[in-house]
Length: 132
Ligand SMILES: [Zn+2]
Image (cartoon, rainbow, N blue to C red; front, side, top):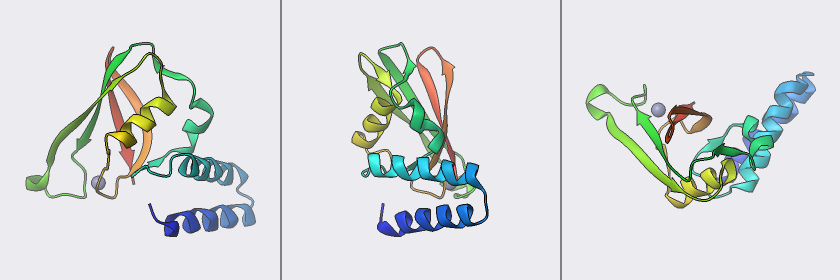
C-alpha cells in the first residue's frame, strides 16, 4: 500500500500519544511495525499478531483459509464467492501464513482490508476475519 497509509498511521500514533491513550498508541505502533515487516501485503495485519508471529497457528501441515465476502461494501447481487487459500508447510506459524497470503496475492479488494482475527472452524479450516 502507499505511503499515505504509513503517514496516516504515524499521525494516528502521535494523536493517541498526545491524548494520553498509550494502550491504543501501542496497538497502532504494533500495526505499523507489521506494515513495515510485510510491505507487500494488500491488507492490514492487526497489531495483536505482532508478538505471535513465530507461534504456530496450528500443528497441522496442510490447512485452508477461507475469506467470505458478504460485507456491506457490495450489494447482494455483487457478492463474490468465498475464496480459499491453501497453506502447506512443516511449521505453519502466523508469519508463514501472512507470507503465504501475500504470495498467493490475497487482496480483500474492499473496505474490509483489516485482518483482525484468524478463527478455527475445523482441524484444517480457518476463517480470515476482516474488519474495516
Ligand atoms: Zn467490505
